[in-house]
Amino acid sequence: MNSSSKTTFQLHDLKTGYRLQRRDIVLSANLEATLTGGELTCLLGPNGAGKSTLLRTMARFQPALDGEVQLFGQPLESYTAEKLARRVGVVLTDKLPSSSLRAEELVSMGRMPYTGFWGTLTADDRQAVDEALDMVGMTAFRRRRLATLSDGEQQKLMIAKALAQQTPVILLDEPVAFLDFPSKVEILTLLRRLAREQGKAILLSIHDLELALQTADRLWLLDAEGHLSQGTPKELAQNGSLDFFFKGHGLEFDKHTMQYTLTNS
Image 1 (tube, rainbow, N blue to C red):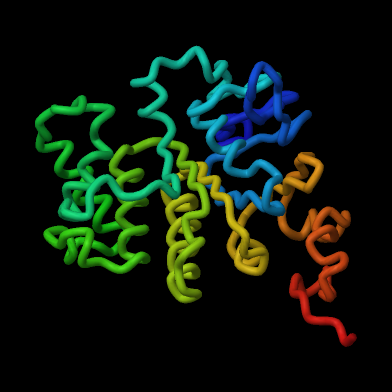
Image 2: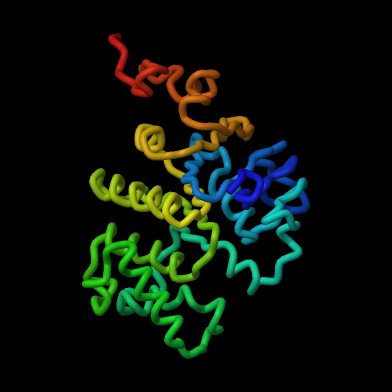
C-alpha cells in the first residue's frame, strides 16, 4: 500500500481555538499535517498549546476558526454524523458514562453508529465487541462492573469501545495521563500494535516525552506559540524541533541515543 492510499486526516492552514464574546481566541494557527494509517502518532506540547482543542476540532466536536480539515480527501464538514462515527473513534478524558455498567456494556456502546442508541445488537455486533475485548486483553473482565476496575483496566475498555466501533482512525486525548508507569507502557504498546497490525491511524496526545520517543512512529509537536512540526522522532531530534522541551529545564538531550538526562548544576 502506498503512502497516499494510507492518508486519513489532512490539515490545511488550520487555525484552532474558540470564540468568546464574538472574539476569536486562537490557540494554534497555520497547521499543516497528515495522519497516516498503520502508524501511532503522538501529539506533544506544553500545557495551553492547544492539543486537546486540536483533537476536538479533528473529531468535529468544535469548529475550526479557519483553514480546513480533510478526512479521506473530503472536507470534514461534508460527513454526516453517522458516517463520521464509522470512520473516527474518539477516546476523551471525560468521565465514564456510569460506574455501574458492566465492561461488555460499555464496549457495546461502540456499536451505536451501526445500531442507533436503542438498537439491538446483532450477531455481528456481538462479535465485534468480543473481538475488541480480546484485543485489549479484557475478555475475562467482561461481566465486571466499571466501579470494580482499576484506572488502567477502565482505560483499556475505553479503547476497546473505540475498537468495537471499527473505525480506521482513532483519536485519544491523554489516554495515559493518570496511569502508573507500567500501565502507561502497556497502553502505548497496545496502541502501537493495533496501528501496525490493523492499519489504523492512531493519534494521541501525551505529556510523557520519553515514552513518546520510544513508542511513536511519528510525532506532532505543538510549541507554545501554537506552531506544529511533524516527523519521526529521529527526524525531529536531528532538526532541533525537540529542543524546546529541554531548554531552561536543566535537561540535556542526546540526539543519537534519543535519551535525556539531568545536567549538573
